[in-house]
Image 1 (cartoon, one colour):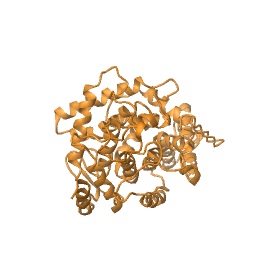
Image 2: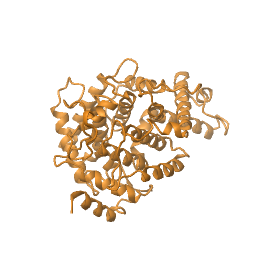
Image 3: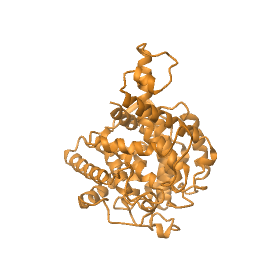
Image 4: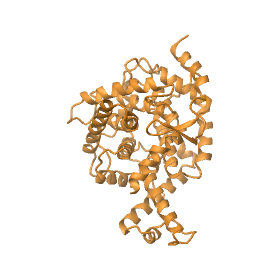
Length: 410
């Protein structure tokens, strides 16, 4: 019996082992979350079995996208961090769960990569030409590693030495990310769809700030303003020059980057209603936010974010937009993940219906071995499978995602 089959059989029985949501510190919540679909357990098993012995995963090179064997490609940090986060989002931690050993091995590999990287470099690896780099941006490794370190950090409270290493690695990644921002708020080295690298950088800054890492607020603000510039909520125009001409990538990047401000806007309006400062039917507008106590500048910023977030959601009801490039690649799966995360942050009432639709959509295109694959650009089954898992388990990561919002809303 090969390694992939062994993992799949184990997970048939492991599917009911994680019925609750895991907190940031590794403790378990009694709050119910959506059960992980059985077909997704098969994907988790496949992804875990695709890990190399040294803890890494690889997506393969842009120059040879036809290689689909996960063990016949070179390891890269971006895919390693992304895959480990997918296993974590399903419910495992460094200490517990069927994938704790996989996560621990990935952490060891990525810490060594970060520690060995020169301080002045833009990335944490000298490897070039990977599928994520070519299609998202040449420095996407550092943004995804920063996200992973932020999610692991709260689970290291009982190991001072490990906590110090993770903290230092995270801060090193953040310095690289901050140095790479351009004046317009996007990030240098963008690939075929550079808006996605910028979106991942924005998420990395939010995740790091949520766990107490020092973040330059001006850099985060510029990042959000850049994402807002990609949609004109009044005209419905979508800028796609940095999205390979694909509206889906710009729309979901905007939706994810505006989610925390959109939620903050609704929170302020609802609190004002409870205190009798606004009518019960008062909508989220700049004027009403000022009536709720926000400064004119903050009211304008939050109202624009809220309007754009809702506009992005409406746009995504159009199947021609959801089709992305025309067939599924890793960029499409990543876009679906950003929408799922945005809905988890805003607690959107449409999230259940969207989740059911997306579940049916993704189950239909799963490979027989449990993986998902791309048909253009990022074809890597490792990257695509991790993105699907991240999409369908976003509600299980809601605590961290909402905590990111709460940090931003203060």
